[in-house]
Image 1 (cartoon, helix red, strand yellow):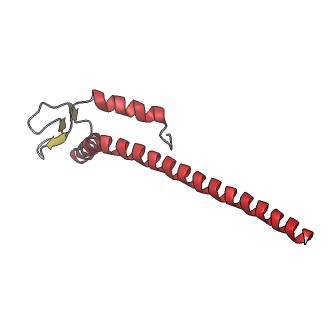
Image 2 (cartoon, one colour; image 1 turned 120 degrees about the vertical axis):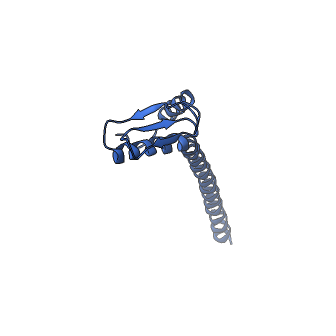
Image 3 (tube, helix red, strand yellow; image 1 turned 135 degrees about the vertical axis):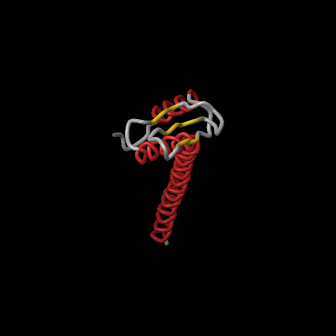
Length: 121
């Protein structure tokens, strides 16, 4: 499994998100059966049915899928915002570093001038 999302991965996830049923998704379940339904709204028709495993596992899987769908936009936006902020910080740091290097060079030049003046006197 990948450890880092690439820009292509984010684009892929956004495409899948756009193609999915609108959020919020919800879980409908009954303690009388092992089947769990995922619905795009509280009154909508089911878009997924989980009945392969026991009630507890079906319920846990359904709640995970619903949470993943409902928070996917927030998570993708957060990743993009954090990456943008990191880039801004790197650029700011690079600018600060360049200023320090320029000042260091200026200081060296001033030291040379002072040395030359002292040697002349």
